[in-house]
Structure formats: C-alpha cells, structure tokens
Image 1: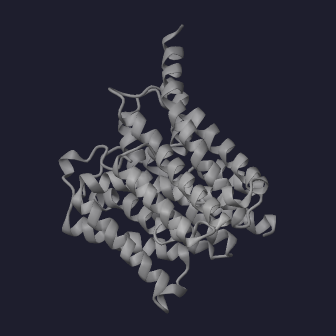
Image 2: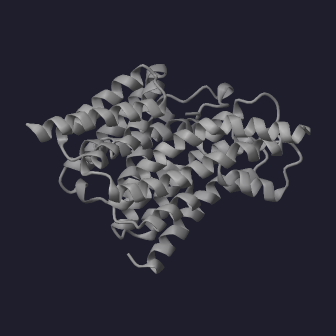
Length: 242
Length: 105
C-alpha cells in the first residue's frame, strides 16, 4: 500500500466516529426541519450546503418564518464566526502540497469535530489524510438529515417528541464539561442564558426575532467576558475545540 | 415556501457560512494575536449554544414536564462528561418514558 493510501485509511478511520455522531445529530435536524415546514429535499439541501449544526438550527426558523435575508446572513455570520479561527489554525497546519482547490474543499467541511480531530494530529496534515477525514462525516451528515426528515413523517408522535430534544441534549453535552473546567465560561453561559430568557419572556423584548436574539445575546455575553476574563493568548491553540 | 424564495435563503446561508470557513484558509497566513478577538471567539461557541438551548429546550417536546426531565437527564450525563451521542440518547429516552407514562395516566 502506498503511503498516501495508508494516510487516507487513517483519515477514514478517524472520521468514522464523527460520521456516527453526525448521523444522530443530523437525524434530529431532519425531524426539526420538517416539523418547521421544510420539505425533505429542502432539509437535505440545507445540510449539504451548510454543514453546520448550530447554524442550520438557527437558519430554519428564520427561513420557515419568512425572516429577512439580513437577519439570516448576520445570524449565520455570528454563529459560525468561530470557524474562521479554526480555518485559520488549520491553514497553519496543512502541508505545502495543498493547492487552492484543496483549500476550497477542505474548508467547506471544517466543522468543530473535524477541526478537533485534525488539530490533535502530530505534525503537519497531508491531503490524503484530510480527504479521508472529511468524507464520512459529510456523508453521515447528509444521510442522517434525509432519514430524519423522512422518518419524521412516519414515526409516532411520542418518538418525534422525544427526538426533538436530541439536538439540545447534544449542545448541553458540549457546554457543560467546559463550564466545569472554566469558571469564566460558566459565568458567560449563565449570562447568555439570562439574556436569552429575557428576550423570551419580557414584553417588547420578546417581539425581537429569534435570529437577532441569538446574535445579540451571544455577542454581548462573549464580548463582556472577553473584556473581564480574557484568555491566556500564549495557550490559544485548540481553545475553541469542542 | 416556494422553491425560488427557498433557493435565495439557501444561497445566503450557505455562502455566508462558506466564506467564513474558506477565506481564512485561503487568504490569511498569519495567526491572530489580538487578545480581545481571541477571547471573544473562545466564548462564542458556548454562548451561542446556550442561547439556542435555553429556554427553547423546554418547548421542544409535547409536554413541559417531559422536556424538563429530558433537560435534567442531559445535565446529569453531561456533568459526568459522557459523549455527545450518549447524552442525547439518554435524554431522549427519558422524554420517551415520561411521555409514555403521561399518556397512561
């Protein structure tokens, strides 16, 4: 076996756990999208072109509710802004054989988990490994969406109701361990939650649309803690890993 | 929703998301050093996910009670740092069991 084939296989095997995880999250997204009024094909197209769980979850209510394009664009910008740091970090780690086309393809599937796995590899990253790594998660993400979107119409209501909570369960699984490790993150989360509840329950504030609520609350909470509890910049690599 | 307006939404969403990922990879060769920007980006994922989760999770199932129990189970499993899939699976199972019991009562 050539060295490239070995690296490609290593990428595939490192990507498989991500693939299975994505399948489950995408399944929940598919149900959510259809419940929100999207068709199966529309749900699949969203997953295949966006490849971002949090971004898609925020986009669907804006699209289904007929929100403005500005609202959609700004929401995606704020929610997905973290990927710019991950892409930046990854751009330093890939080897010199990556041409422009490779960079265009790899960055398309640079998700939290793909970034986490690739940045944890020793030394620089080669093309064969990166392509192996991204291929199964992308497939799992797309397939999970379709099956969730279709099954959402077949499964009994009680099962759909249960699965509606899945994506939030996953978010909690990302948030909570970090709040145990870092007090500023815990306080930032509390502030974000308090603001989010204020925009849900306080009259006038609750007329702000969901896309902007996500932007306002997360930008305010993050900016406040970036000022009062800035991170140790010497140790920045992997700080945004989830 | 007609296909034309959906197509516009899809395009905006996909292009914005892609540009964020693609531009740094293609254009920027140096690392960010601004401490505020790095700190801001460090907090953003947790803040965003929290805002999207609460209070929305309490309205994500058929009954408020089942959602609350699902939330509680997710918190406990997440505290023990179980994998994303496990946390999601057990919290969904808790909702399912709760709703099956509620349907019988």
